[in-house]
Image 1 (cartoon, rainbow, N blue to C red):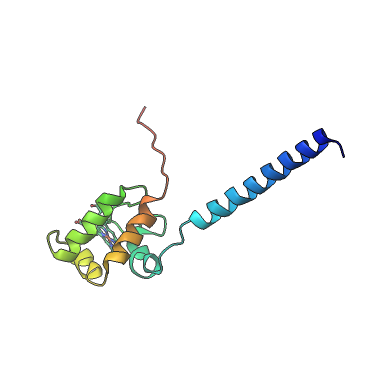
Image 2: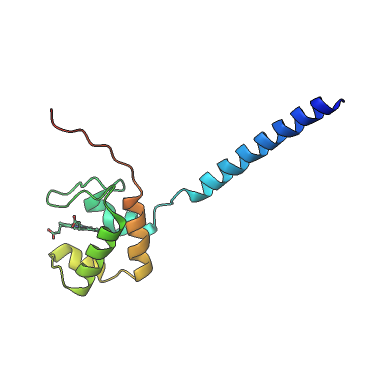
Length: 114
Ligand code: HEC
């Protein structure tokens, strides 16, 4: 094997391993829905944050900070809603963080009216 072939082979190997490493990193970054989305939120807001209950807002793509703030306000009683007040009583700070991460991590697209 001459030097040039060796160089080409090492470069190809590098590219291969970098690609594999990037894929692994991507896979471990993927969010897994917190169990509480399924048990506590899905009925009204959907897994994908598109509300299934009339009167419940869509949550997908909403700002993380905003979602956290609203959930904390419901829990503290500063924002009142019959359903949300009861539901947020069961949430820990960690729950609020992961629920807000889940709904805010969804990418939505918007189409302006023509
Ligand atoms: C029984 C139906 C129901 C369930 C279950 C429910 N919600 Fe809600 N949610 C609502 C309704 C209705 C509102 C609108 C409240 C209002 O008018 O102030 C709301 C409002 C919210 C808001 C405020 C959104 C905004 O635009 O200001 C957030 C955030 C939210 N819900 C998150 C959650 C999360 C997270 C869960 C699960 C832990 C959950 N909700 C479970 C009915 C529900």
